[in-house]
Image (cartoon, rainbow, N blue to C red; front, side):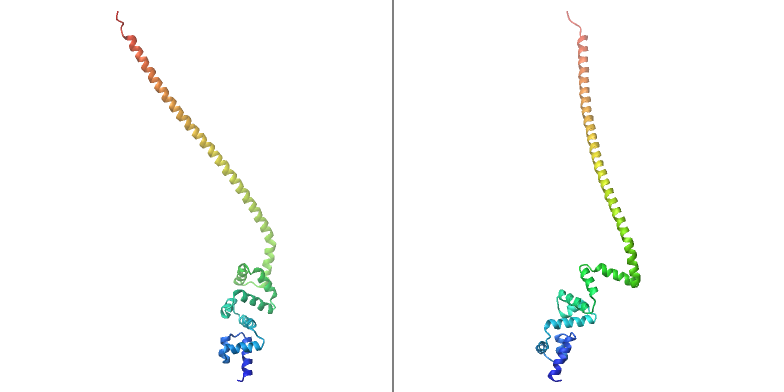
Length: 215
């Protein structure tokens, strides 16, 4: 194989997405030679990365697998993945992806549910039409129940406040009753003491009257 044939082989392998190591092994040349040939052919490193990424995507490699194989940052691989789909003419999918990229799991879960249910496109469309017809009424019912729940919570809070106030009044009443009972006990004790003194005085008076007077 002469020099021109080797250069053509290097360019062809690079366009297929082969790495420098793979090209060097297959063409039997050094990485410096590969770089020089690709620069001469107008294929710089970024172009080579794009070509290799597109080649891997065409082999149904995932962005994660491509990022690992090419040792590239996630953002760059995601950008290349989008460009790959755009090149395939999947512009609508790209638009959807841009809308759901921050939280793709609901969409992914929906696709999985459809696949597990073995639903065809027509059935999915029909189901979405039915859901679209019922969802407004479901939302209205949800809003009504939510308002009813809020109203019940407000009533419960009012009842709790009223019950707390009633308990406080009852507690104050009980405390007052206990205070009066204590005061009653104290007064009864005082009365008993006074009655005992009165009885003692009466007894002393009787004894004084019973003593005979001496002339």
